[in-house]
Image (spheres, rainbow, N blue to C red):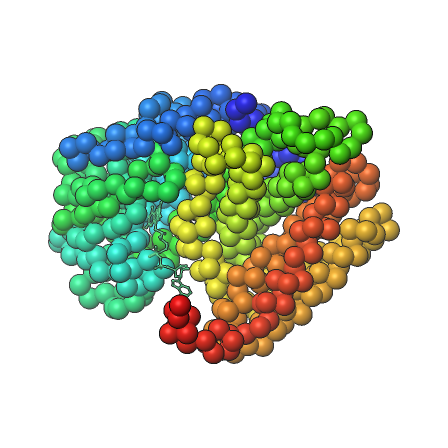
Length: 573
Ligand SMILES: Cc1cc2nc3c(=O)[nH]c(=O)nc-3n(C[C@H](O)[C@H](O)[C@H](O)COP(=O)(O)OP(=O)(O)OC[C@H]3O[C@@H](n4cnc5c(N)ncnc54)[C@H](O)[C@@H]3O)c2cc1C
């Protein structure tokens, strides 16, 4: 069985969990009515299931390769990309004046997840373009916008992001790429970038690289970094690709998964480029792209989880083993308690992660519609959670998907292992999940915890209001929220950031667990505590929310136990 787009899940979430009507009521989204959005999602679902999902295995079995300096992509990928471009899906949330649809990020988040669930390695190409489009919209000159945005939005050209260098991974400030002014408004960019997703390909006629580099007088560290737009082919006066720029693909990486996505080592040798944003403002401009991409990467994790869940469900409904443990069962392994446990927690986690990603997207939409700092702070706080929890869910669910298949999970032809291999990198790129968690406990708590406490207040108020209808769900959630509140206060009281950092990952996971409980409770309340969503919420509260106890306990340990062990003691065998 192939991929099925989770349309009814999205419809439910839009209607009952993220209050999409409030977004549609904003002037700037007046055309994105509930009906229009339902039609858009339906169309994206058709494309994902019918055209994109059949390419997933091609990407895995026939990876992109380098031939005489040119990257050839997996069979069918060029057609798949063309279909995504022609459908207008790349520029869904881009500004209409440049050819975009101006749809809310909430809708784009849903569509991106579906396409990622269908074929993660192909979907990474439009995702990179979307991030670049947003960065140019916010930071590029009018000339650059006019030339590049229509081409990126239409998919005639694609975008990449070039941060990473061998010595500069998480520590972007350590980069050594340089840019020299040419005296005519352009710059010459020189340096090597590694791991560049879709760094080159044959699915579109030009590749536009956003490259971080340092100007001659650029200070050390992140403050001295500027951002440059460096196309593979320099546009002529009519804006068509002409002269080849002085940049090349040195090699493609051999990877654990995501084989259909060409991951390139790029060499820039005085390549011509143009400044995006002010000199020294590169990190700020790149963060626009990275924040967009972080939510998108969270969606990749959720998409992979959905694909893995669907595959596991089918297998569990067909495979017969052991005696029937229940009356009126199906006679297949889905009757066994442990298999049912795995499937139920997989489904419960996919729902939670998807709803959290949509909460983040909805906050971004409300912030851009209203300009409210409250919505902005909420979006900023939720972004690392959506990224890390979405990708953790992808890893956890796809790992369980392999387990549900037993030995067949380890055999490649089922495709269960591909989800597991492909999704693994999502916890690493766009800032590792460890870096996301550090961002949460440091920068995102710099407001004294206002954004965090506003979310916790909201959860507690809803929990109070649900106590009568759903006491078995509301009471444990209220306790968990109070525990999280106390741990947030503990975090804020730690002046030594390293004490926070030692507990950052469990803290982020616990925050996600509580938000997951909140969205499950909302789902249960939407059916007055009676029905299948309430049953799924019950699984979540009993089996997954309960993890918050150990997570929050670990979050508050501090760092002394870790440093009490020396590096030599850790290495001892
Ligand atoms: C398939 C793939 C595609 C990619 N695509 C792109 C792309 O398109 N563009 C691009 O620019 N990059 C890309 N990357 C690079 C990716 O973003 C980096 O790999 C990632 O940011 C981590 O950097 P690193 O690999 O150097 O690991 P390191 O930074 O060396 O990290 C190693 C470990 O140390 C931890 N760590 C590092 N610093 C700290 C710290 N200060 N505190 C606590 N822990 C820390 C990390 O969390 C990690 O666990 C891609 C990578 C892969 C594998």
